[in-house]
Length: 264
Ligand code: CAA
Image 1 (cartoon, helix red, strand yellow):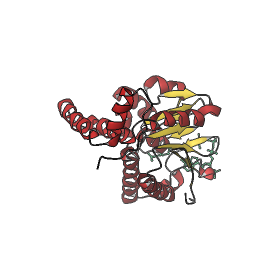
Image 2 (cartoon, protein in one colour; image 1 turned 45 degrees about the horizontal axis):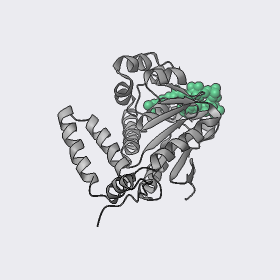
Image 3 (cartoon, protein in one colour; image 1 turned 120 degrees about the vertical axis):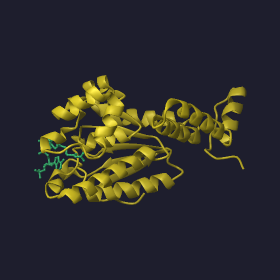
Image 4 (spheres, helix red, strand yellow; image 1 turned 180 degrees about the vertical axis):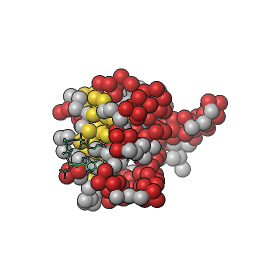
């Protein structure tokens, strides 16, 4: 894969590991970072050999320390709005990537860092991870959809507690409120996430992609519409070779070998 100024990328098996790599600012999100990640998501979307993506932070200290405060200090009303639009659109693109995205939260995930983690499908935290939405302490509010995703993820009370106080929380508290799915020893974080990705990758890739769409879009619907939407998506699975292979392998008592392809 090509070289990037603010990212390190490797692909192992069917999993792309994308590391934010802007060490001098603890991986804070400035425009060049947003622009590169936008391009990287296009590359990953188009790469059929990549089934699952892990997002993490390079270095030992930070996942992402937030939006770039130095850049934000010079912005006016219009620029602030455009910055929020750009970040929010990018995080939506992560959420809508047709492949599972795992956040391997290896350290500080503050402000925009917690917001990036929330746009991922699953969050695994190192014992050293620190989450928070400290924006009110800067005279701001979360700008990359934190006021929207956090209450949907942890409930409105816990979200308001975090956002109004601006206080950081450690990994165990994040786990307790549902802001991450597991906490693992720091040194084991990446291996844990790779194993998790491998567990996902052995399944029918189109089915996983459709399950992601059914969950994400379903959550934006009323329940009855969600039921109906799921039934349509379930029906759609029958158009794939993986449906034939998966059900046949079960009957033949062997491991399925999936291609992710649709029937001709
Ligand atoms: N933006 C720009 N630079 C940042 C940054 C940020 N969010 N976070 C850290 N840095 C820079 C620091 O300025 C410092 O650079 P210099 O050496 O040039 O001074 C370098 O990274 C190392 O940081 P520290 O010396 O502060 O490291 P520390 O270990 O003492 O503290 C920290 C770590 C607790 C994460 C601290 O850096 C911190 O509080 N950072 C800001 C966190 C924050 O408030 N994030 C929210 C930003 S607003 C936002 O994200 C809005 C949104 O919704 C998009």
